Amino acid sequence: MDYTIAKGAFDIVPFEKEEEDKWRESGRWQYLETVLRKTADDYGFKEIRTPIFERTELFVRSVGEGTDIVSKEMYTFIDKGERSLTLRPEGTAPSMRAFVEKKLYAQSGLFKYYYLGPMFRYERPQAGRYRQYHQFGAEALGNTSPEQDVELIDMMWEIYRRLGLKNLTLCINSVGDSQSRSDYKKALLDYLTPFFAELSADSQDRFSKNILRILDSKDPKDKKILSQAPTILNYLHPESKSHFERVLQLLEGLNIPYKIEPALVRGLDYYNKTVFEITSGELGAQNAIGGGGRYDGLTAALGGPDLPAVGFATGIERLLQTMLKQNAPFPDPPHPFIFLIPLGTKGLEFCFPLLCRLRHEGIPAEMDFSAKKIQHGLSLANALSAEYAVIVGDNELSSNRTAVKNMQTRESEDVSLEALFAYIKKLLDRKRG
Ligand code: HAM
Image (cartoon, rainbow, N blue to C red; front, side):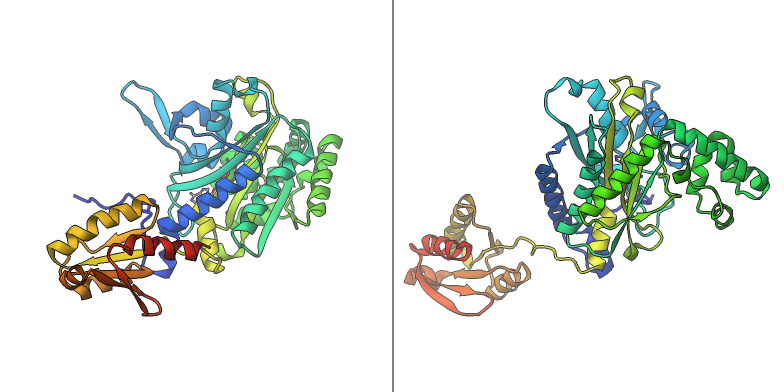
């Protein structure tokens, strides 16, 4: 029997010893989630939560049959009712499914949504690539304007700025409208046909299924052949071209540096016009911390109204790993303000109600329940980084006085037991200003 964690998954725990594992500490996740939600609030995006599993056909239809995600990476299973279900590999298709199914388009106001949660892809696990991983994503519907594309890119860029990340590269491209794409596909086909026999097996397979996907190939020989391939930017029709130019102009206006990457087509089929990815030099092979683009036809394809849309998603694991590598700041973890050290039964009788009362007042408090040894209590207070410690044993109870010890300065203040609660409260009020 093997009861260990499944391959490609990981636990998020309060403390990790090794520096390289610190990204799995739950306090860091909570901090990140707070920043993500606050940024979403500031940009006017509302949360949408969808199930972890969906009907398989949702992803086949939206992400696309010829993509690696659908053809190789989905966790698909048949349930007891003979339905084919899939653990969501990404969040755009489920949120659009919910948008259509719940008729959110009938509401007044803006259609701007975000999600945060686990996603699943059966990939070969390695640093920065997991089988259960997490995304924060944002999607905006209803606008064709380039400003809408840039609102999303700016939001992504702002998240990274708030988190203190540096040296990121925004790669951007346009995959055009369907007419531009079909012209380009023809040109790519003409170019690749003489090289067909030299292409990798995967690319040969994609040649007839979805030729654009060949541009995703990581195979070195394919990459060499592709280096001379025609680029989509030369095939953009006027409307797509001016849309792209306006997006770039808006980015310049916001001082967001970008790199045009004509081979960037992204690994999902629903995109049109703008596509983008943000990479970090710190991440090695799995260097994309986020990506997105415009996907105007998706809501109609899912049976809803034909609304234009644009969005992005960022990988939480890669974000945290980049933050740690760049020494980005994290807030101090919560710790007890006061640590009570009772000695003996009487001390315990005095301290336990006090502990509860302090907490009811919103004062972070902790206590040594063993109530036996001062040293045990003090080392626990130290381990938890408590700010103050109080000892209450028989001596303190008979003299009705105790010392409130500042764990940092080692200074202590003598206080009567009746005044203890008020004194601690005053200390905290003073600290909080
Ligand atoms: P994606 O590029 O496939 O886009 O994924 C977004 C991000 O999720 C990646 O940039 C990466 O940081 C992270 N990620 C993906 N797979 C893994 C993995 N196996 N392990 C760790 N991190 C991973 C999408 O999913 C689109 N739905 C984004 C989007 C939203 N487009 C429009 N709206």
